[in-house]
Image 1: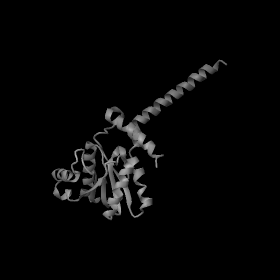
Image 2: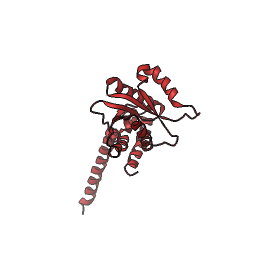
Image 3: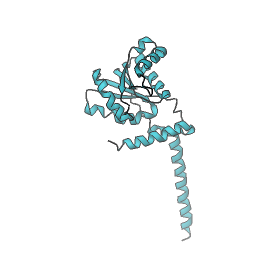
Image 4: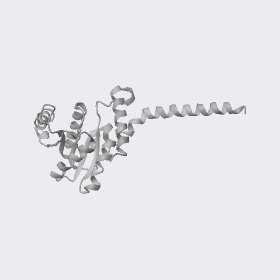
Length: 207
């Protein structure tokens, strides 16, 4: 069978070329696996800012404030821990930050929802925030988070609507300075990509 080695090498070459093309496409468009914006079609009652790293949180707050400036959201609900590591209440400190960076008028349109210390996942944070949303009697919200977090957050937050059909939910992603693109060229972006991809995969099966 003289053609068998040649056929094997040709097949191996095609497989190798296909693998290279797959890797290049993954590097170029891989972040699309994580990013899935679903902005509201019109004005909503509030923009909900999820907790994140210090740098990411600043970007999310600025994005939510921009939605208020544009008239997309009437108010902002800022998710914050009940207290800092040193037992300090977060809302007063956050209020000072908001007034200094966005002015007193915009800062006055921000409300706070304090979460328990044991909240350590997007799902648990959602469960903690929904009662605050219902207390304000808001019927439409846009969840503001980092762009790389939008697909997973969207999957989780869309579970609110079937349980509470009176609340409409949309997702708005903001550019996060900790996730520069292309993601594979930056160490921090690569770490976030791997971690978030793992969490997204886990969310497909977790209850």
